[in-house]
Amino acid sequence: MASNWNVCGVCDFRSINKASVVWCSECDEGLCGECREHHDASKSTMNHGIISITEYQRLPSNVLAITQTCHKHIEQYQTFCKKHDCPCCRRCVIETHNDCKDLTAIDDIVQNVKSSNAILEVEQTLVQMLETVRRIRNDRSENLKCIQDQRVKIERHIKQTRKMINDHLDKVQESIMKELYSKEENESKRIKQLLSVIEDIEKGISNLKVNLNTIKLNASDLQTFLALKHIEKEVSDKEECIYSALDGEGSKNITLSLLINKENRNICRAACFGSISVESKSCKVVIGSNKSKQAQMIVPISFSKCIDDVILSKKLQINLKPAGFIKGCAILQNGKMMLCDYNNGNLFGSKSNGTHEFDIRLDTCAFDFAYFEKLNAVSVTDGFYGDGIHFINPSSRRIKRSIRTSGDSYGIAVNGNALVYCKSGTGIMEIKWDGKSEKALVQFNMPHYSYVAVHGDNIYYINKDNHSVTCYNIHGNPKWEFRDAQNLRYPQGISIDSDGNVYVASMDTSSLVIITPDGKRCRTILSSRDGLSRPHALHFEPTSNKLLVANEKQDRISI
Image (tube, rainbow, N blue to C red; front, side):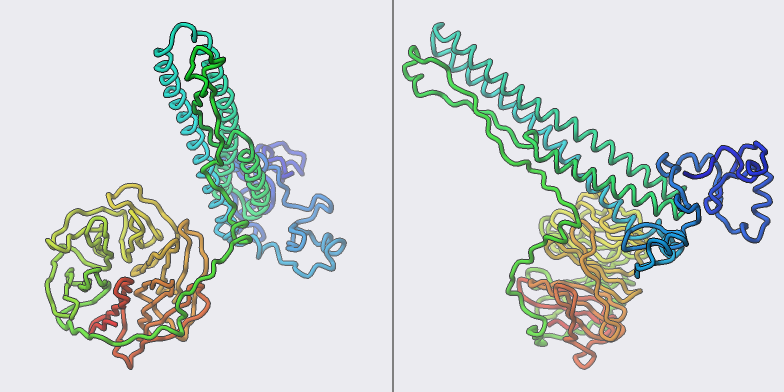
C-alpha cells in the first residue's frame, strides 16, 4: 500500500509528526509545506509531479491502495513483463523473469497511458455496456407494460364473455381470473427481479466510469496503468453478469393470451372457463463484446467487382473556368450534376450532358454537400467560414432550413435519417435532419478540410495531414487504415461504389485511387495524363454507375 498520505513522509522518517499538504506520486509519499520547498529545489526531485492532498484523496480507495513498489523486494518497479502481464522490479527480473523475452521498461509502458488505446477501449466498453443495460432495462419495462396491457385486454374479454352466460359460471370465472393474475404476478416477479439485478449492474458500471475519469484527472501514470488492470477485470466481471442475467427466464419476452375451450359451446357443461397461456421469446436486446465479435466474425462470400476489373471510360468533360475552388460535387438521381464553389459560395448545376443550367448563390461558403432523398433536399456544409448545415430544395433552389453546428463543418454524407459530417477539432459527428440528437461517432482532433463517406454499416474518413483513409464501423470503432505514400498523398474527395470499393482523390499526385473493401490494396485508375489536375472532389452515383471527378480549378471530368 502507498505511504500514509496524512503524514509528511520526510518528517515521519525523522520522527516528526507533521501533516502533509501535497503528494508526490514519484516519491510515493506526502510532503509538508517546508519539505515541499526542499523537494522543489532539489535537482533530483524538482521535476516530479505533485498534487494537493485534497485532489489525491479524490482517487478511489482501491487506487490509493495500489503500491508502486514490489511488495516482495520493496524496490521500485523498473520493467513490465508482457508475457505474465505484470510489473517487475530489478530482482523480480533476475529471479522470475530471466527467461522472458518480452520485457519493456515500465517508463515506456506508462508514458501517455492516459491517452492510450487501452484506456480508450475501456471507456468505449463502459459506454457500450451502459447503453446495453439501459436497453435491457427499457426492453424489460416495455414487456412489463405490455403484459399488463394484455392482461387488461384479456380481462375485458373475459368480462364481456361472462355477460353472455348465466350465474352458473360465476365460480368458473373466478377460477380463470385467479389463474390470470397468478401467472401475471409470477412472470412480472421474474422480470422485476432481473430489472433489480440490471440496475445494480448499471450502478456498478457507472461507478467504474466515474472512477476512471477521476483516475485520468488525478492519478499518476503508473497508478493509472495499474488501476486500469483492475478496472479491466471488473469490466469483464460485469460483462459476465450481464450474460448470466440474460440467460435466465426473466429475460424472455412474455405474452399472455386466452384460450377458450371448445367445451364452452355447451357452456353449462364446461368445467372451466379457459386457460391463460404464457409464450416466451428470446429477448430483443442483443449484446456482444467487441473482442468476441472480432474473434467470431463470419465474412460472407460476395461476388463484388475486383479493383483490377474496374474500367473507366471517359464520357464527358466540362469546363467551368469562372468557378473558384471546387470542394464538393455530386450526381443526382435524375442525372443532373452539382458542384460547390467554396470561396464564392455558389452551387453550380448542370444537365446530364454538361450544359450549365443554374447557379444557387449562398450567403455563406459551400464546402461539401449530400443529397437527402427523404427531404428532397441538398444538405450543404459551409466549412471554415460558418457554423451550420443548410438544406436547399434543388427544384426551387432556395434554402429550406439551416442547422447550427458548434464548430466548422466540412465533409458530409447521408446515413438513413441522419447526417454524418466532419467537425474540425472534434471528429466525425452524427446529427438528425431536424438538428436534434447530435452525437460524436469518432472523437479526435480532426483537421480542417476533411471528408467522410458512408456505405452500409461503414464510415470512411480521409485525413489529409497523414495521407490516410480509415474505415470505421457504424459505432465508431476502427476496422482498417490504409496508407500508401507513393500513390496517395493529400487525399481530399472520397466515395464508395456498390461493391464497397473506395475511390479517393489524391490531390498531390493528381490521380484517382481505388482501394479494396478490406483496405489492403490500391490501384491508380486516373492520372494527370487523363486530365486530372489536383482533383479535390468526387462522387459515385450507383444508379447510373457514373463517377464524377472535379479538379480544384480547371476542367471537371465526369466518368
